Length: 110
Length: 118
Image (tube, rainbow over the protein chains, first blue to last red):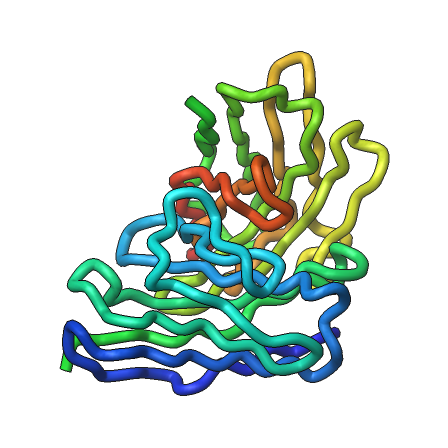
């Protein structure tokens, strides 16, 4: 099983600041099958990034994904009030029986 | 519009059973694989099960293997999760999800809460 470790657990920032979230895999993630999701309280997750660096429809360009192999990053260039939420990475390469999510990073208002 | 709506959640005693449903609309359901993903209260996301578009290929997380059964009825545009021998640790919001426009889960239902407690 590929274990995804997200850091930090909580990120305390102010609107307008840059957020850098890390997702590290215990083994190489095949073909960059790495996604990022945003979840707000009481809501289902929302896909932000797929294939490590491609933005989903309607996702603002202040969100960007990068990385390959075992190290991936989600960057929010300038935080807007609506960006304060929990972010999860997910690897979906290989067999579905090995799909896993990271434990999440909470981005909170400082 | 593209939509998934779960139902069937509720309170059940340990050892009991529950069947969740997920109704799809706005897209050709039979073209897409589906998954169930759950989230325990205050916790992260856990992939539970996968079923291919035809229903011929199925996978389960080790935590539910042998107790849960995923199925689909493409004629009814519906996905199901039969949950038997439920445990307290199965308490969670259960989401159905599918990769519709991208190769990751871009369509999610609103979730249905399952509580396993005596």
